[in-house]
Length: 96
Image 1 (spheres, rainbow, N blue to C red):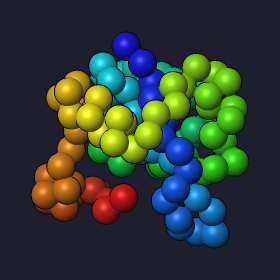
Image 2 (cartoon, helix red, strand yellow):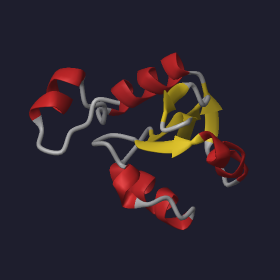
Image 3 (spheres, one colour):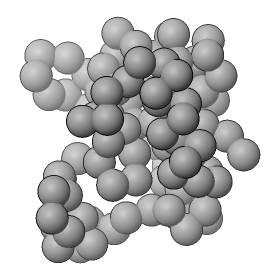
Image 4 (cartoon, rainbow, N blue to C red):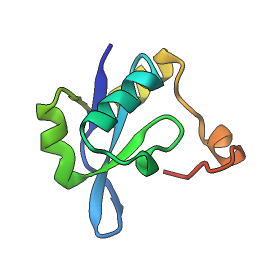
């Protein structure tokens, strides 16, 4: 069971963003995010969007750095991945 983070590579709002996920449960993900002061509004159905400025502190807190492909592979294997189609059909689903 791990919290995973990809490299900051997703531009928005004047910064780059990473995705923070769990490879086992949303409860684990929410607990980690809460402990690190990441607001719940950053949660997007299966991941948190976190700004580049938080990357090093999240890794120091135990998030495991992976590339984007590795993150998606492990998220799919966990059964927690929300597809783009599902994301668009769910209320509140974003497109990140």
